[in-house]
Length: 314
Ligand SMILES: Nc1ncnc2c1ncn2[C@@H]1O[C@H](COP(=O)(O)OP(=O)(O)OP(=O)(O)O)[C@@H](O)[C@H]1O
Ligand SMILES: [Mg+2]
Image (tube, rainbow, N blue to C red; front, top):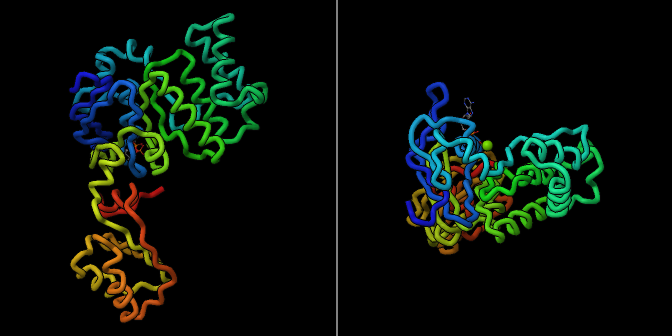
């Protein structure tokens, strides 16, 4: 554990009826950072969030939040964390203001303090002008913005967001990004989960990549991209991709991985441009009618393929 860690996760595992959903995961989150857990469906992201929120007990390992143990000090932890769950939990027949007032009372707010806090949060998520409309008429992104406001009612020092941009229109996404950045600038530590590359690339100071319950990498975006080094991705699309073409391409010295998925072939290789002509020759010789061929610079998607051999499902 480093001195400035506000959250420590040590060798955390969670089993559901014998199924290992999270296995031996360790990481620290520093005070004041935006930390991202990135991984495909079923990677174990929500399970980790649920354990950190004291909603689920770990099978093994230890988690502390600001010095409190999730298994022993849940009451202390709940006072300092705010949680935006993956599934929106709001009353659709009530207005935004009424939803916020309902949850504010649960947190013990009342009177002018409650009213002021609600107005402040409506302004922060940009929904003051819609505050007296029932949520049933809201878009998915607007509902999520209200859910974020609810999580902030008690002014938590730490905010957990499970998939903040899933089912969110671009305008709301931008607003959510701005809100997260503003909160962070004011000192809030943020943990978010996502399977959207954009969230991780645009928001997070550090990113932990998860796959099948395990942590496969953890670093800053720049650090993670260095892991792929000079690797590129060449993407070929064609109605038919003969298996022998993939086999022959795999034999090329600089090629690291070849994955065929329907009409799309993804080739991970070092310095892609140098091998491009050779790859095109192989495709032509195998009778492949290429529809498109594209070289991509390294990004998180490339890294994910590099680390796990599979594409990140969205
Ligand atoms: N209550 C449960 N009982 C049994 N298995 C579960 C339960 N909750 C989750 N799992 C399984 O544990 C694994 C991890 O699930 P989890 O919801 O943590 O993944 P995730 O990374 O959040 O996925 P997503 O991107 O779909 O939200 C999955 O295989 C899931 O089916
Ligand atoms: Mg999830």
